Picture (cartoon, rainbow, N blue to C red):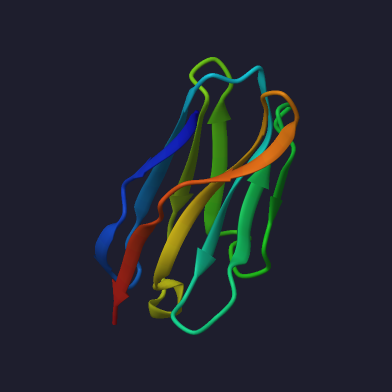
Length: 118
């Protein structure tokens, strides 16, 4: 069993900051890429940022320059620091990890709500 547990969502005013955290737990051999996605009501889930096990990062155009993704391989955690938040960042944010048990598979957290008020 593998679990991704997210924390850190909430309500913030435009221009403010939030930090999301995600911890992977359970029985697995290895974690490859980790990342954050978001899904607004009525829309598809979209990439926000990813980070490889060696620390290579990738961001959506909207996240570039405002968000920073980081991970701790020893603790199996990934964080997303979100600065200069905008009302359009309002969404449910999901943690994702590519995890090896018997085979590689994608795992998702339960989602955490981020609401940015104008």
